Length: 141
Image (cartoon, rainbow, N blue to C red; front, side, top):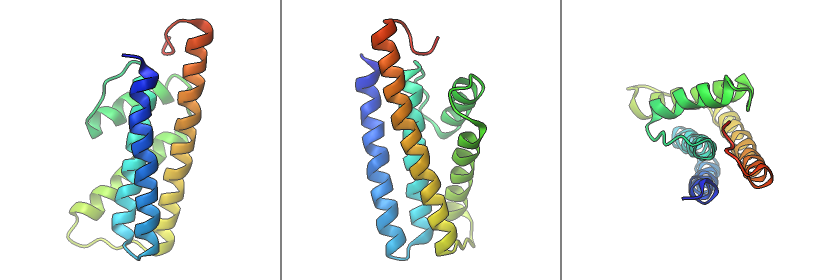
């Protein structure tokens, strides 16, 4: 299957999760907003990895592959990796910690970081698709 076609689904899911995060944040559900923000970034990372030929699906595999194939290879900067890890940690604390509080301001910052991550992923998927069309070869190397 064409990687671009495969990447479109997780990118659309990322946009949906961001809309959910915005709605939850406006409604005062800060930990749930952070959770949706993480899943927006997670799916955006999966989309980029699909363009690079990776089939990573689990949280651990996506984080690992993202570090190897994106950050280490210079396709994205270290801040992207930090954002993905920060969002994941906040989501896990919000979902599993017996006591977790996140202020509306902190949640808003995390949602904004996820939005930037998704925007980067959308641009990167397009760049990789374009280089694939122009060069005719593998986008991953």
